[in-house]
Length: 77
Image (cartoon, rainbow, N blue to C red; front, side, top):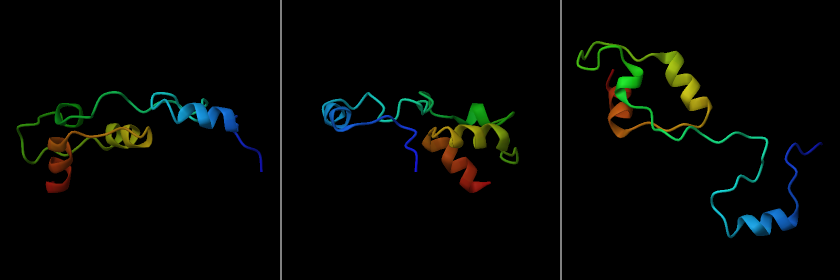
């Protein structure tokens, strides 16, 4: 099986000292911002407004995070 990440023991050892480098350089970093309610809803003050699933799906697939407020709103609706 081909390894798509060019890692060796020296790279692994180096990463033990750094938490900012990616082990697999071909994998992009997750989004820096947390997805908030304003990013998901067209009218956040309307309790019946549904989340934009396309935006949410793309953010989660990129390993993005949500604010606690956005996560609670998704769970409650």
